Length: 327
Image 1: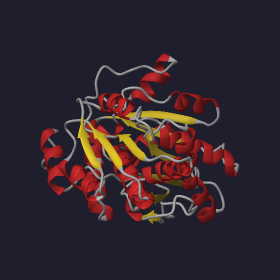
Image 2: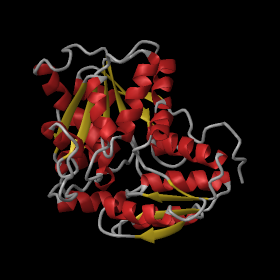
Image 3: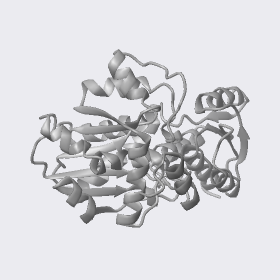
Image 4: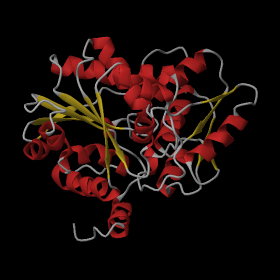
């Protein structure tokens, strides 16, 4: 059981590794920020760990978190470290390995509705109980503050800014945190390539509309990118940094997962595949050819956000479902 007053963060400083295979594909040095090796399996522990430590200091007695998987595991892990009970609300189609991991962390698991938005409504009801606090997976200043630590680590490792930063966007928490971190270290000029899969492209749809819009449904296999409405803060980030929003097909994200597994011996989920597809699908090269990115990038950092909703059987099922069995 942890001490709520302890200030050490629950996340670890993750490796920044140069990828030979991705560098070959991109024609420039590609560095991987390996958030997949976080103790809770994804970058989410940075922001959620920070949030949970803060509310514990303020007397929270029970954490509740609506999640597609990764946020819930980060909240459950934080709750166990803090010695506080946790209830994680997942959509009904949640991966069995995620439910097992949550129960292994000592959390109570509830299933509600088809998509994250349904789970969120249930979590908000639960959070009305005395001493219970709802842990927002992506839309809260403390979450963004925690995610900003990733950029501080990049600054410490690289010294000089990279030519571009590639990340996946779901609800927009990672994007908001990275933008906050770039401002903090004076790297606001570094362009961000924000990747989504079609069918979970709430950020891209909001940019097209000029305001947050709600997707009718999440039709992408990248369920962990599955917030039907992106955080308003993500749109505000467009005024502060150069953000290039790109959408790839599910097949490109899943193909990127398989190639990354073969190239780097790391298995990541489709949300992360969307970020990797920026390189593998030639998206980065196209942005350079169009003059939207510098034609000679010194280096590109890809945030390998990780993910718990994946195993080898699930990867095979995703490929078969998309007609990629032979890839």
